[in-house]
Image 1 (cartoon, helix red, strand yellow):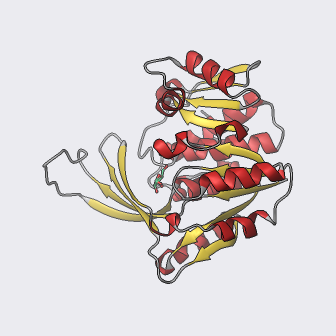
Image 2 (cartoon, protein in one colour; image 1 turned 30 degrees about the vertical axis):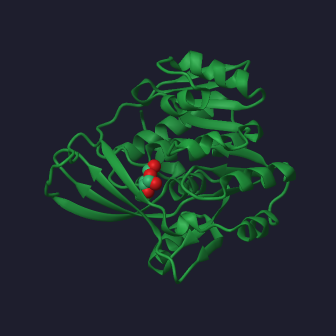
Image 3 (tube, protein in one colour; image 1 turned 180 degrees about the vertical axis):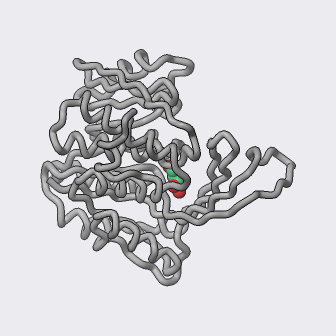
Length: 297
Ligand code: RIB
């Protein structure tokens, strides 16, 4: 079973700061590092390192060629990535503060130049039962969902970063939602609800879908309308939280593809995310399966 991740590829410019810049303030950063990133790329790397047969599709500019090489090194197929000489690669400006927390400003660039022709050509290489993973950092997401659903692919949506475009997607065609409380609340039009209420409301609104709700420091919850499982986080010293959620998503879906019990897949995903949090950067922080297995917790 193959996985297609139609997703973003970003160059992450990570600025180390004492605190995140406030409105009207100018601050100096202590350090600038450049990393491969993008929610799409990070999730592909996690899937590849977890042992899935994963292919990434998307667009980059010439200066983003190293992103393609990075994916290859992580065991990800890159034949469906288009290199567009006239467009800039997507990038992210990330402030990483002394607590390891971050805030991110995105520039879509090539990520927003996906064409329906590219979608059709890419999907023609995949079959019913193959997985499709999507986030909300590229254009044409609705078209990709429609076409992949027609083919009978299993569709995973991580609706991040959340905006009004997500609410216009054909969400009834999604098989897995992996999302946080804020995203769930916005999809449901519910405010200030806890994890249990949100996961139940999502399962009711989208019958048959599997819901994984991430709750930050409170861990995550799986619910499919019948079975529920709560997973705690593994506490580590936080260096940089960037890509922790992407690592969780990639490792969890890899577990589903390997037909692991939900409990095992969630545990593996939580361990992998903990290792990512203990390291600097996005794609480069994502551990191999061997490192996850060695992680004592
Ligand atoms: O989820 C982390 C990612 O979000 C970063 O790598 C950045 O590129 C943004 O897309």
